[in-house]
Image (cartoon, rainbow, N blue to C red; front, top):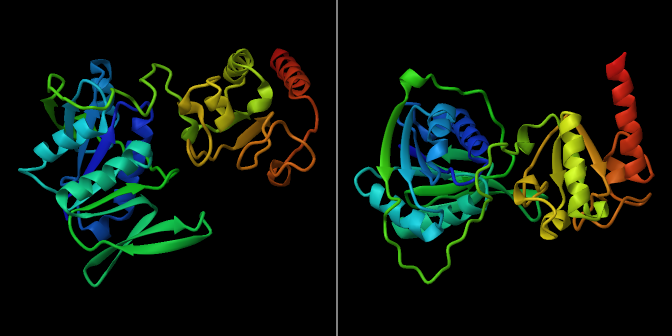
Length: 316
């Protein structure tokens, strides 16, 4: 089957999402019956400055670059449908984020195909393809049969990633410029992901994460902790209340709605760890049961002492 991967490079996390998609195809290659030479990445981007980063960083041999003025689902779907008229695929794979879920469902509807979001794996039985995903709040896994082609599905969050780098001289890159395409929509222009930043937040790959919550109290404190995390060689992750209070950007959000990470060390400060992330940490907070080490104390005192210990160790 011919496979194409849709990448939203207007999102700062596009490289990690592309790596997850490439790993998924590598793992399921015998099922989808494809090869590296037939798998294609279709990349939508708006910032010309990241074009080189896209072509050098994506682990695909065939890359189609599509420049747009800004990310808007309806615009992307129109362009994608136009591009696919002459070279349709059997499988369209979308990243495991909000935009990927939306595009997978809406594109399948346009092509009269099948769609499924948050897929963990696929299986083939008697020539029929099924997608496996978590159901009932993650307590069970369900199998869903794809009835009609093309099969459009998005990946679950936090998929595995392998080192699948492709040499530059083995890549085929083509470009399409739709940045001047007029689009009359009743919807206002919007982005569901933050604009690209030079210092891209990569929580999924971080070995050390400092996770902070609403108990920090202010955006100024979040900025201070961000500096501390940098000094300690860690990434700063935040809970949903921190994002909702506009103390930190969406790309630092940890959890089901944000990044799913697996660091070697996670230092949780002023966050309970319960689904709604209650204020602070106490003896009954759910995170206590999952922690290797628990300190019931004002986190500012703990951080201060930790920094002093680290500085002393460096001076030895």
